[in-house]
Image (cartoon, rainbow, N blue to C red; front, side):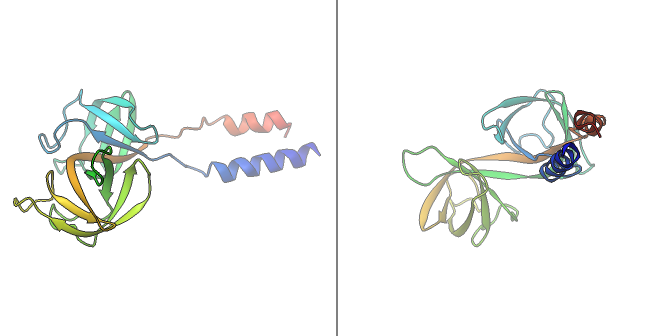
Length: 189
């Protein structure tokens, strides 16, 4: 019976923690995006997912050679090194007056132009919900940004702010090499 219990437990752990599984995290740069192509060390980053509102500080940044924050860069935040999987804008929208803004990332962003027919992924407060952008009312500058309105779910939503977001995964394995040996020893196999 002890061997079957061990086999079942190892199987459950294998399903729960696939080899190389790493949690993706989303951070937003505090301050004015676009001010500096690569944020200087010491920049403050706001965690959006999974721990909304946790603040962290940038220790270092390794660019992939394109001179801007983009996929395949590396960033070290509060001592942890991350691989940048995605980088792009987050639009903070107020869809109903008096309610806190909600955050959205375009799934396939255009270069600051008309977002009509794009699908936006909600990052706060309802992480992972997708929304269709039905229209855009520009403030006259020709760029999607603050003071514009987008139509989402038949509601005119005011863009109150735009941030730079990155989706990252930690570099390295979160599981010690000896963990499986410890589990086997616990079950006597």
